[in-house]
Length: 158
Image (tube, rainbow, N blue to C red; front, side):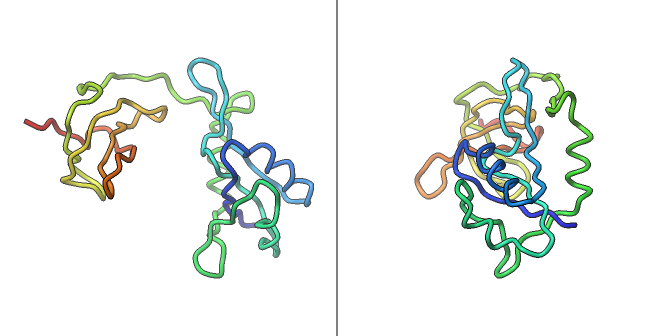
């Protein structure tokens, strides 16, 4: 059976999950255990829901903003994606590997993005995120917007 992705209200993933489960749907909310032992949703603001035929009613569930869709049909996830996430769990949480490196950049440094959809753009370096990706602030429509890029996708600006 396919899975759909439901967008939840901010920090309401667990409450939304409970309400969806009461509607007889299987759910999956991958939880991340950070290096300091705290727990949070791996994909903040998202919940995976297994559906058979019905999905539109999920959008009327308290805590759910909408089901991610393309036009009139929900975006479907194959069960292998959920299985792969579950295989990474230890005691009910996904544990990321400890940071194995530090960045060669420092916070506030001007950098250039060298690959990906923002290739060539200038940004300000923010640090490493919890997935060991480089986090930068990119100027989008006059606002500094945080994005993460693959490690090695930045260069120094002279």
